[in-house]
Length: 226
Image (cartoon, rainbow, N blue to C red; front, side, top):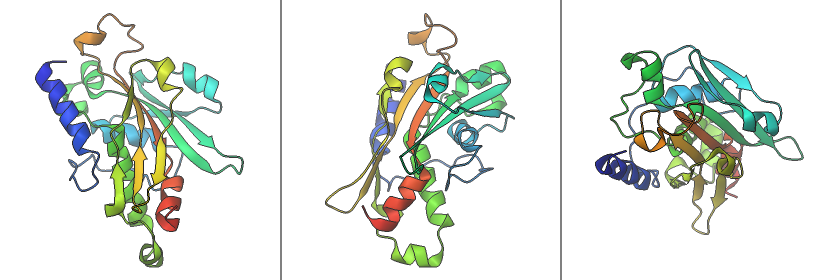
């Protein structure tokens, strides 16, 4: 990655820490991100890279299997794992997806977002989730909600550079004394064409992983304020 491109990525990450920043429009969604579902990570893939390629989303039943899984570029395949609490409420959704430059390399330049543009971050998915959640709320829920979208602050992704370190991290959601909800995703991002990773195994390159706060957990925070 060149210095100028790295500076763009850093600048975008800093801007994404504030909900007020207007994001670039994402691909038209096929499935909302207002709740957890079987196509959640395939929808995350579409929105991260603006692809309309057909894909398979594998739902992993245990974390050990998920840790060993790898997304596939052709045919396109993503992997999904959910973390639940003792009441079986979904707290976290983890997605393994492919980068735009890998999709373009394996398919065609029209199949994914131009990698010359600033890459989308996992925090952009949190932004999309908040908007989808808010749109899915009824008038009564919106009126009584303790936290509105403008009070949600998107923190810069916590970045890992190896899968072994990423799997040990988790996303964060907390309401501060100022009444604002802060969301932070945990990510691994390694572009296919990035010269820094050319010596790495092909199975490791071209991957974008996200640990995300579940939409159910975000919705709970927005409604209760805690």
